Image 1 (cartoon, rainbow, N blue to C red):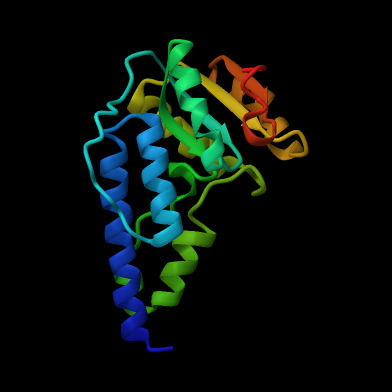
Image 2: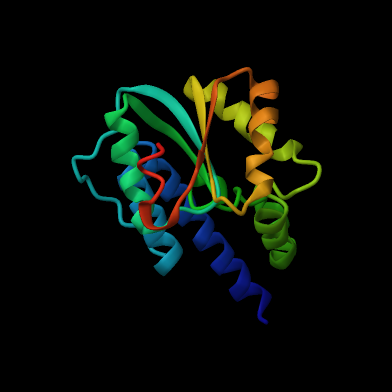
Amino acid sequence: LDPAALFAAVLEHAARRQTLRRHCRTVGGRAAAEARALYAETGTVAVTRTGDQPGSGLPVALLGGPLSRADFVWYATAEAAGLCVALDGSETGERGLARDLDNDCAAADPLEALVRAYFLGIPDAFRRPDDALHEWLAQRITERGLRAVVLRHDPWCDLWRAQAPRLRQRHQLPVLAVDAGEDGGDLGRL
């Protein structure tokens, strides 16, 4: 493995993620989810104006496991209920993007920089302690003026289900826990 080639690739993808993050803040929830899905599938970032602007409803955080493309209908359902997904903290949302790189570390040891960005820098419910997840969320609650959390978890995922009381206690926000279904089966419950 050529360290110089790895360093160049690491920097290139870091720049793409920064572009993706900026773009996702300027469009609505579904358009942002589509942009992140494209990046996950192809590594490309398509910055387009689709007319899908951020909503004006109650700003909420969406937390939980991954959303498939079939689940993207959830954004329209949330908006119809008067919500604006101001933070997609799902696994396929912005929480799942690697953190920004330490460029000095990347220049000295690109592999170490990758480990820090991907394995240590993505906050999740499975990490113990789960303080990194709650610190990440607290910062975004303040930045974006979030008023509630929608915790969307799969029926088999006890880790996310167990987060509901901790989210309420730690962040002093209402938490709506929604059991996800297969292929949009959660929409009726939502």
